[in-house]
Length: 467
Image 1: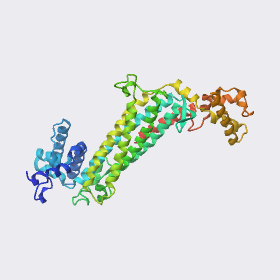
Image 2 (image 1 turned 120 degrees about the horizontal axis):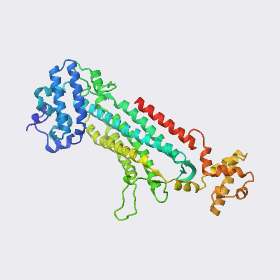
Image 3 (image 1 turned 135 degrees about the horizontal axis):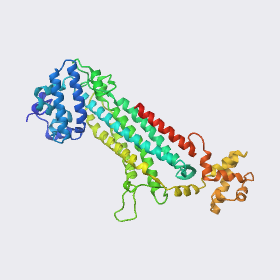
Image 4 (image 1 turned 180 degrees about the horizontal axis):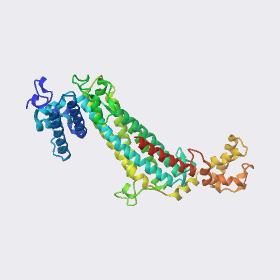
């Protein structure tokens, strides 16, 4: 078969493309994933062309009917993809021409594959962002509800992974929720920049046909057409921004995963994950491995890599479109799939976490977690903080020697370090007293946790309502 009959652009060439080069440069094996978006964009383009008089209504209807039939063939798995036709665009256009004749060749009037693929990717990303946003919302909702239920559950808070001060499990979960809230805002902000229409930029300079890009934008649900044809076809910063969001989100999920893995261990024994989120060992029958959080933690590096790949892809490209941009799809597709699946796993798993309250409480009792409360108590009695710090340090040293927590010491034992200490000290040395004392916005007091959960619930509802 000659190049001219095999390619949309063969007229200028005197010999066919080398078979290896054809395979090397083809993208249809992965960009066929954009078929639904490609057809949607083509239907809108044909509708606009008919509205401005470039196509007749009959030609428009033939094109739309043919594209709708092709969509059905693809969904049923009947469509035959061809590597020599290079990409999703030419495969669909060639099939359309087979079905409706020369009218199919008119569809490409006033556009190029350059603005066509940029439009397809933006449509794809918009669709996937909406799915990801729904999963992120579901995860946040489940996390907020669990935090509200566990507002009174005491656990140790850590710095340097050393016991620091007692907090509540609900407070810890709301810290996770705050991370996700910022991620949610980043995702919705990214969507605004994705939702700009490149179609009509053509190859790089626009087109001489009397197109109406505002009509196409309205038909496809874009906020507006792009302002500059060179930029519209050549930049992929919107995809980079998405993978940047994805990397930050995965970093947060990885941090959560690390804690979940630690907490399920026998050494911590803070939580239990339902069996459906875990696996066993082939030789150790006692094992229950937290595979879901481990995999999420592992997949984080994968998404980081995609961000670096896209940044590197764009870093030296002159205006306008270059073949390099064919390499944007596979990392973007995989980043989308990875983020969506990780969020789905977390949204299913987090609400099912079962805290082991007694283990958490006992862990909080170890490590002198109320030491700061004793220092604050002394300061309220008029002791300078640095002096109070030294008194508490001596008390802790005594506790290490006698293997007693501060709350387990007698009043006489505590008074050997300061005679200012009185019986009321035990009100602040209990775990319950310690968490209850942090009764301000952002604090770990149970009442504050419940109030924060209520505010988070309202903020999420408002975000959903404004999306």
